[in-house]
Each structure stands twice: as structure tokens, then as C-alpha cells.
Image 1 (cartoon, one colour):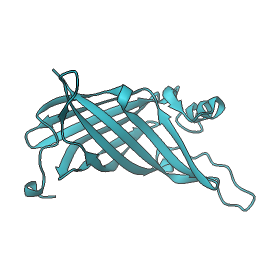
Image 2 (cartoon, rainbow, N blue to C red):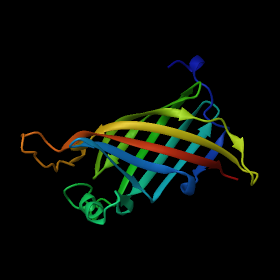
Image 3 (cartoon, rainbow, N blue to C red):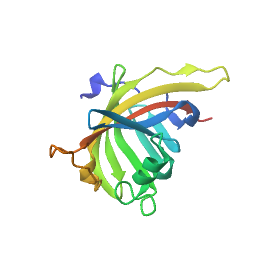
Length: 181
């Protein structure tokens, strides 16, 4: 993407996550459908300059919620995230750009202590003034990763020999940011 095609993500400054109005989730094909979950304890910040931005975020593994306490516990075990040894998932991008309302971030994601490059794409809303006099903007992004690249290898074979759980996991984030004072 050339500089002529990019524009400012947001007014310069630091934008902090509004966690009450933000959701970070994931989905993965499981047997005959798609299984979805989310992380409740997340942080993120967006730092905008005149000609670019950086984005950082994290999720606490112990906050994973898949609407079943036993399965949430299994996801925290060494079979999956290994929350005791790796309590946090992290994302950072130094190369965030905007083309119209299309948001693209070239960054790195760390899961279970393994860091891999990832491209995050989505949209960003223009900043607005909220009822409390603050500037707010929304970013909605997705990325797909192969969970086995991060050591999340557990699976369950079906009677046909196929595996119950797909390797590709789609991570979604609907984030609202408030400009720091």
C-alpha cells in the first residue's frame, strides 16, 4: 500500500480500550459446526501519529469463556493454552495502516510462548464525540491462525478417522477506543 493510499487512523495520541464495550473472541470448526468462545479480561491501546499507528493488546488466558466450565478449564490446561505457564496471549503491530475505512495491521501474535507474524484486517470507524465529552472510535478486525503453529495440538478423532477440531482458528475483535486525555 503506497503512502498516497493511506490516511490517518485516528487523531494523533493514545487511544485506550473501553473493555466494557469491546469483545475479543475466537471460532473454530468443530465436528459439524463452528465453536465460539471469548476472552473477558482484555487490554489494548492504539497509538496514532500523523502518518501511522501502532496497536498492542493482550488477553488473560484464565478469562477464556466457552459457556462450559469444564471446557473452559480444558482450554486452560497444557492440552491448549497452558495458562499456568503462559497466562497471557499478546498481539502487537508497529505497521498499522488505513485505506479508506479498511484497517490493516502487520504484526505478531504470541500464544503459548510462541510468536508468529500475523496480518489483521478489518474496518475502523471515524472518531466521534461520546456523551461524556470524550473522543471514541471503533475497530473491528479478524485474523486466522493455525493453532498447531503455537503448540495447541490436542484433537479428538471421529469414528471416520477425521479429526473433530480444525486447525484454523479465526480471532475476532470488536474494539472501542477512547482517546486518552
